[in-house]
Length: 99
Image: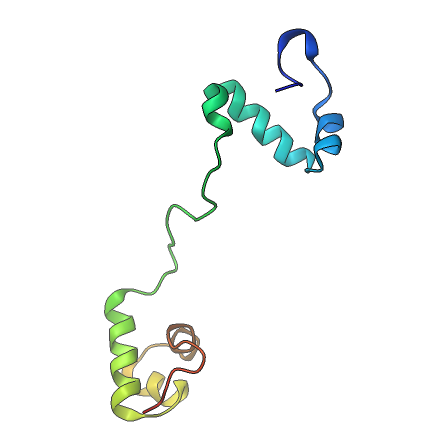
């Protein structure tokens, strides 16, 4: 890293501008490089480690089954299953067949 190799120390903001990345991103790279060395600069997934608001598989199955049996929209499925309308809308993908 040109900004963290002994004599080559340069302001991270200047290097970030040259590389076309934000200062926040450059500081993240510097921190990872200092903590892990070159291995810290390997690409990482941006996928979250966990999704606390994810709908359970049981609820998804309940909503999809209700959709197939009742052939109606989210409001009626919500009434029948007790699952909030917004959750039903999230579970059913756009264009999910009603029949």
